[in-house]
Amino acid sequence: MFYTGKAVLAHFGAYTPDQITKAMCEDYSDKRMAKGISQGSVWTELGHLRGALKFAEDTGAIEKAPKIWRPSKPQSDKRILNRGEARALIDGASGPHVRLAIALLLGTAARLGAVLDLTWDRIDFDAGTINLRLDDAVTRKGRAFLPMNNTTRPALIAAKKAALTDYVIEYAGHPVKSIRTGFTNAVENSKIGHVRIHDLRHTAAVTMLSAGVPLEKVSQVLGHSNTAITFSTYARYLPQHMQDAVDVLDFGSLRRNA
Image 1 (tube, rainbow, N blue to C red):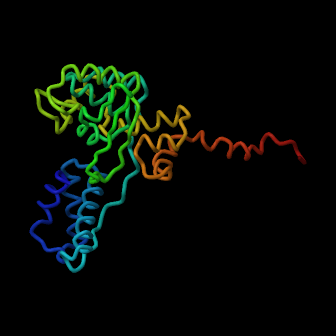
Image 2 (image 1 turned 90 degrees about the vertical axis):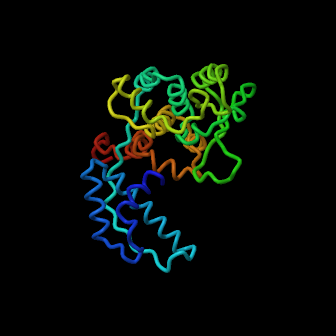
């Protein structure tokens, strides 16, 4: 909401909710996309505005939330890396904190916020586990409690030896708030083309499903509240799960009068 708020408030901040119109929303969309912001990002930003106004209505801060027009939601442009590309991305990171963050993002399928929040008291080397969960009961999106693998374990052991803070991802003795610059440099160094940080979560999910990991386990790793979310998000990447269905439609192999 920090980044969304800067853009939304610059355009809508001088108006009361009842003054917001469809034309204003369309104007916002046009101006943002003219600056190179994707349609998907504009869709999300106006969605955040809609959610904030609806919350204000629900809590009695305003009498009625206005209707917020949004451009149509574009088709997903998720980038799924193959194993070679994922390895190249890790190797392309110039800073050890960025390299560790990328390894954890790929090795746990976690969201970036969960990795940057991770502290050493939630790493158990004896049990070989990574606890991405927070005890504050505030975090909205689900997080998982996971075992380490052959990539995350040695990376964490090396980082622990050099640790200066309680945070797993740190730089110069301070917790890291963002790896955007370092990640961009890693992408450029790896020469694998355009990829976003969140694509690493998608890559991990599709890689698990493609390897035959049951949907229920993948859903748990992702921290989804139910398997329906996992299926609706990733089923289109796995056409093979419909193989038995289309095999029934193999009419060409039938003998005449069969």
